[in-house]
Image (cartoon, rainbow, N blue to C red; front, side, top):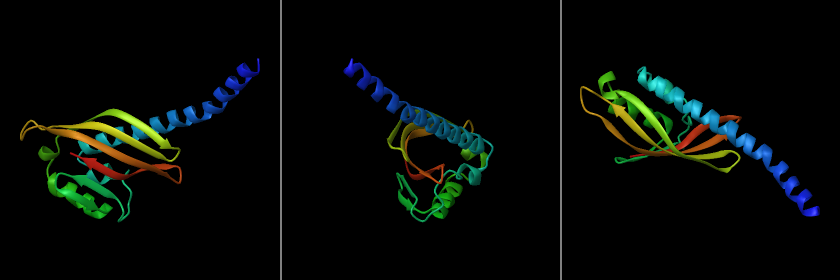
Length: 143
């Protein structure tokens, strides 16, 4: 009987953690959905809104490592100067983990459908941090 009580107690303790993770997962998925909508509407500045507005933001790509929000935004605008180059974005989330309550790690695929100039796609990993109850991307590795 003591074992049953103990295991029931442990399960009850874990419910808030699972509930919070579900809430955080939904929040991050909603942010990613908004990002695709902003991208597909040609709004790169709004697409960047979940990124950490800090010189410590890191963006890793085939071209190397970019440090800082302003440099990352500038690179996006240089690489995708027109609606044809931006195409239509789609994300597929492959994995989302929460190594701690205020940290999330997301692995996914991205695809740009660009009928006039050719499709493009790859994979990404995003490191998220919850700051003042808001999820932000602090590091992006896209290939």
